[in-house]
Each structure stands twice: as C-alpha cells, then as structure tokens.
Length: 87
Image 1 (cartoon, rainbow, N blue to C red):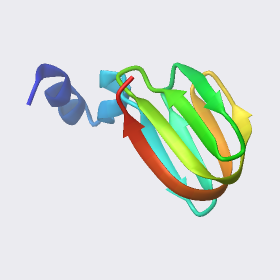
Image 2: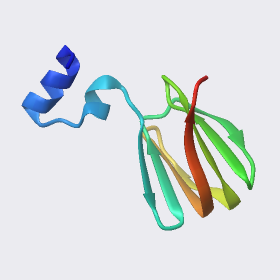
Image 3: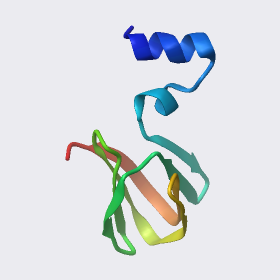
Image 4: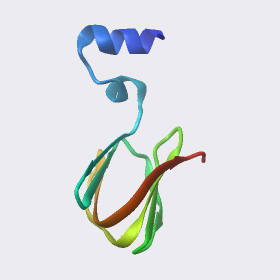
C-alpha cells in the first residue's frame, strides 16, 4: 500500500479523492462519473469520458447527459455496459 492509500485510509477519506481516481456509480438507468477531465465521445449509444488515467466508456440506448458539473457527469438511458479503457 502506497503513501496515498495509507493517508486516505488513516484519515477516512475516499481513495478516489486523494489519488485523483474516477468514481463511477450505477443505479438503475443512471450512471454518475465523478472526477473526470473531459468528454471524448457523445452519441445516443456511446459516451466516453476521460478519467485522467483511463477512459470510462458507457454503452447503451437513448443515452443522454442529464447534468454536467466540474466534478461529475450524470448520464441516463438504457445502460448496457460500463468499461474502463486505456487512453
């Protein structure tokens, strides 16, 4: 375990906050991607998001970005797959 992992565990801080990692939550027909850099691809069947160390690819039907802030992207639609890809 590296110093950042130990620091986050010792302080009770989520590792994604300390280590600049993406956090993805899937709940029904909603996907939330936190700690992203930029949007790379946006279609109704595929959304790819730059998550600094890799990319998150969301595939499905009728995909749409409901809300986008500096910290998170909120996606809705019929989610078929969520994968991490190398940039």
